[in-house]
Length: 441
Image (cartoon, rainbow, N blue to C red; front, side, top):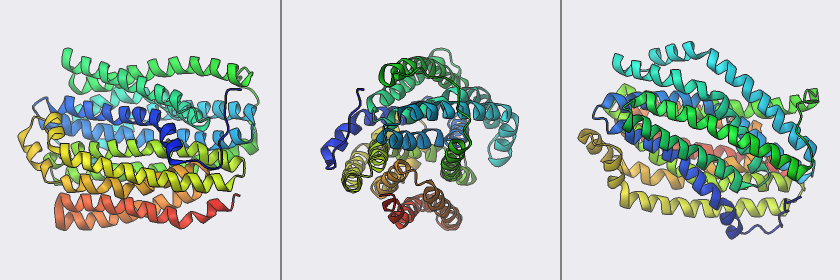
C-alpha cells in the first residue's frame, strides 16, 4: 500500500501543503466561468452575457444539487480508509457510479421541462430566451460525465490523494477553456460554443480518469473492481441517508445563488449582467478557500475512523485559522485589482461603470464566508449530514426573506447585503451543531 497515516498534531503548514494542489485545481474551476463570462461579455451585446448567466446558473443548480456524489463519497471513503476497509471503499465507489448514471438519465429526460421552467421563471427578452435554450440543450448532455467526475473527485479526496483529484479538475478546466475559446473566437459559435466546449471536455476527462482509476485500484488495493454484490440493503440505506441529506442541503445552496440571478433579472438586464460578473469574484474566492475545506474533509474522516479526537480538534483549529488568513489576502488582492479585472471581463462601458459601485461587497464577503466554507468541510468529513441539511435550510429561507425586503428598499446593494448575511447565517448554524460531531469520539 502507498497510503500514509496522519499524526495527531496536524499543523497549519501541513494543511497548507496538502491544500496546494487543490488551490490550483479550484482556481481552474471558476477560471472557466470567468473565461466564459469574458467570452460572452466581449461580444458587444448584453443579451449574450445575460443569457449565459441564467443558463449557467440553471445548470449549476441542477448539477450542484447532486454534489452529494462528491461530498458523500469523500466522507464515507475517508472513514473507511481510517478503518482500512479497502474492499468496501471500492464498493462504495461503484455504488455511487451507478447512482450518478441513473440521475444523469433522469436529468436528460427532463430537459424540455427544465427549458420551459427557465423561460417562465426569468424575465428576459425573446432573443435571450433563445440563447438560453441553445445552451441548455447542449450542456445538459454532459450530465453523465460531470456527475461521474464528482464521484471520482470524492474518491481521491477521501484517500487524501489531492494531487490526483486536482489533476482531474485542471485537465477538465483546461480543456474546457481551450475548446470554448476556440468555438467562440475562431468559429463564432457564441453561447453554443461555450456549452459545446464543456460537453466535449467533460467526456474526454471522464474517460481518461476512469481508465486511470481502474488501474489505480488494482495497483493499490490488489482488487479488480467488479459490479457485483453492490445491492446490500443496509449499505444502500446508509448511502441513501447520507446522500439525501447532502442533496437537500446542496439543492437549497444552489437555489440561493439562482435566487441572486432571479432578483438581479427583476432589477433589469444590466444588473443581471453585472451580478454575473461580480459573482465570479465570490465564486473564485469560494473555490480558493474550499481548498482547505477539501483537504480537511479527508483528515476529519480519517480521524473519526481512527477515533482520534486530538487530531480532529487540531485540524479544525488550524484549518479555520489559515482559511481566514487566506481570505484576508484575497480581499486585499480584490481591492487592488478590482477595476482592472472588470475591464478585462467586459468591454461594455455601462456594465463597467455599474460594477465599480459594488467593490465593497467583493472585499467584505470572502473573510465573512471563510468560516462557513471550512465548517462545511468539517461536517462533510464527519458525514454529519443531517446538521448540514438543517443549517442550510434555515440559512437559505432566512436569506430569501431578508433579500426580498432589502432589495425592495436598497436595490442591488440590498441584494449583496443579503448575500453577506447568508454567509454569516451558515456559519452560525453549523457552529450551533458542532458538539454533535464530538459525540462520535
